Length: 424
Image (cartoon, rainbow, N blue to C red; front, side, top):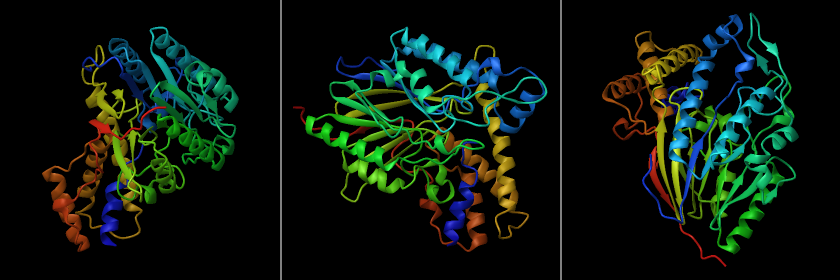
């Protein structure tokens, strides 16, 4: 039980607080997530914005410049496809959607196909605000139907089939691959704000499994994409951060793995992490979670899809014209936000922690969070010393020499392979 508390403490604040030439039969795919885009027309440098940015750690003007840099990088890379796994907007503001659609159209005008799914911050958000002047003022959000209409050029209009129960849909990537885009959000239930947690409706799941059976008969590989995580990305994530996984995640992962889906692209938790789930029958599915473009580490991925494999390469926006220190500044802001929440949660745990351990534990949590969001996290000697001291305090028997906070496989640069069937 004490080992359980050790893992709890280590997770308290792990929350969203160029490629070589490839073969002609491959597909080059860029992947981004959690833009949380706020239209520049919805804020100015007043008290409302300053107060919100101080509380949240966000900097909206800087986010605009990060997207500008990413767009320039994408135009250099010229991927065939750009995938966005949800939370396109800050809080579902209609104007933010309109402005983002214009940005996406500029990419499609350069020959980059764009495919999106909604996130929990995109539809029917009651607390959508503009940050102008002294106080935030309510602004219009959008409906489910409006989302599908606005993003018709970015997936919905080219769907092979759409789900009647949600905004889920299926598209063809090439003659060998389909992409099943899940809507895992609960926007129908929004009353005062967005709901963090997600689910796949029973009707949607049956619809998806039927498509996977059809694809299997045709010898087509179906990849997935949705906003919420499909599998745990750290020990006990489902216990302490259940809102960042779909409900009944183990059942859904089991069913999708056994139905032949080898991987799924997700976001939501603002971390760069890949975790492999193996079903009881021995079938595997990899959850490729991508960090947010609204905060450190400003991540995006370039991937090469071929029959039976996906090569993943991660990139980070670390500087901007006129700001060579972007990465360090963003890391510092995240560190401040993480430290504030860590101290609060440690004090409210329900069992006493000696005063001499509090700063060590706070520092440990902050360091682990900063490592986790960028992926491939490993504890350094100083962190291991803090772990040993806390374990000793608990009388814990955890084998810290073999302790690992990161599930396999590698998070940032990896090749994922799977078996394929011949096409009819």
